Length: 86
Image (cartoon, rainbow, N blue to C red; front, top):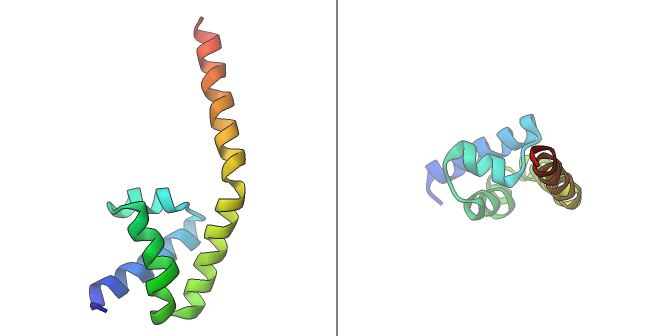
């Protein structure tokens, strides 16, 4: 694996852990796709730094378990704004 990919994977994982960021937030921050973020953190990082990969995986798992709640809140807020504007 190329060193810049390893470095990117480490940077992404550190960002996600420090900011409790979602895959989408990390992708936006680094200007790469969600698929790349996910592959870097779940596959490539395991080879480079297994401990960091495990920590990042915990953040991903928590965000994944909470995503339906965030989606529901976003929808609720959307309709509240539409109703208030009417």
